[in-house]
Length: 180
Image (cartoon, rainbow, N blue to C red; front, side, top):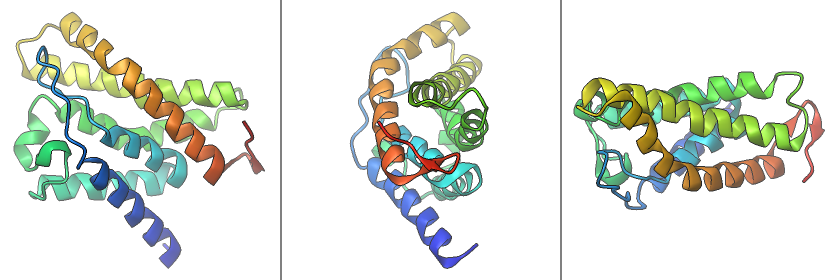
């Protein structure tokens, strides 16, 4: 990797960490709070692309795994990865690859199709992975876990729109600048 790419990857990792300073909003009915860090995950995916985006998120998650309090609410350590939020963290790691693949599909060539695909991957896929994990590690039923994620949809949709607007300003798709 070139120095510029290393710096970009590190900066996005820092953005994800900084978004973790914003306190999580506990919901009470599930042990997973609303956080702002998933905005940084989506930004990593659309700004850095699949490889560097995944690397940025991997570095972030490794910092959390070894105990640096970089997750929202100052969470860190191996217990977080096997607890109720572990599936969402896995979903975050998979997001850049899934988003890169989905945005490269030939029918995803208009602004609304890109925005929709970002939503499907950045919100829906992560929530499904997180729900499956939540179902496995808590007494919540699968249907209950899936339904509880409906609380995340409005805020996460706004985060997707924000990530899309940033991506439009900072990145090109298919060699031409995307315009709103």
